[in-house]
Amino acid sequence: MKHLQSIKDVNITGKKVFLRTDYNVVDDGKIIDEFRIEATLPTIKYLLKHDCKIILASHNGRPEGKVVPSMSLEPVAKALSDLLERPVQFVHDCIGKVAEDAASDLQPGELVLLENLRFHSEEEANDPGFAKQLAHLADYYVDDAFANVHRKHASMVGVPKLLPAAAGLLVEREYDTLMGVLEEPKRPFLAIIAGAKVSTKLDVLNNLLERVDTLVIGGAMANTFLYARGYDMGKSVYEEGLTAQADEVLRAAHKKGVEVILPTDLVVAAKPAEGQRGRVVGLNQVGEHDMALDIGPESVDLINEAINEAKTVFWNGTVGFAELAEFARASKAIAKHIAQSDAKSIIGGGDTASFIDHEHMQRDFDFISTGGGASLELMAGKKLQALELLKG
Image: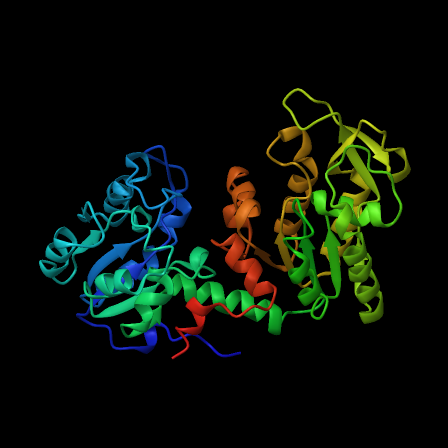
């Protein structure tokens, strides 16, 4: 496995650093996810220890190239200042005179946070001129925005072409952990892949079949597999056009000797809404007006037995409609069982990480990725340009 060039591998002492972070955490002027801010603290503290001048940059939300005050990163500057116990100056733009003046005035050990990069449409367009303006602010580029490494945006792939570049400690740990699981897992290796759609995770399933010993398929995507096997799924969410691909995954697993665990019972209700009561049914008992919204206790037992045998567990996607407590029971039971097991446990970011956060179980797992889409693309075996640029 080829490692990324880390800030620990380069002489960064005293440098003016453009630190790309992922502070996509502000909604309507309020911080909704402090975990992502805290995840960047080790890199920031390392740079401060080495007398760097730090220019923090991030996107937030989808302002589509317009200035949207409710998506400003200003609340992050205050939160960071509290966490670091030192001032973090906020700059009301990311390019132009105000940004250039703030960057040029920086002294060793000082930090500024630039305004939302996506207030400029050139960021998502990967505009070379915009990348040049950002690069002009610093003399070194550090990427600590793992959740964004699958995006070809100016601050992710444009700036590191113009400056010496290295991975921050968060990106380094994310990459080494996820690639380590793919390439050198302790066996037996169990992957639990769930969520809404097979179409978004087909590449992941096919890549994991080359590497895992057991594969659990859950959530609404399991409905497509069950439908492909001939079960009537009523009003459940499933992708009728992907039954052939689902069948192919099962055939490939059988050929490779990979055990696939699909639900053997389901929790159904009329719709996913507050006040709905779920009932447990067998696979042949889904009514025409039923929606499968969780897996049943028999299915949970099967998965927990596989967890007992595993030495490595990778989990991406809740196995039910976990936004509602009534349909989060199976996901909770599985989370607790993984947490209590001896297996190395990796949570693949996104909705699963949010669920673990909601359940206050962040410290019960060996690793929780900060990037859902990014971790999935890595697990699908894809090369990500933002990471390739950090390989030296």
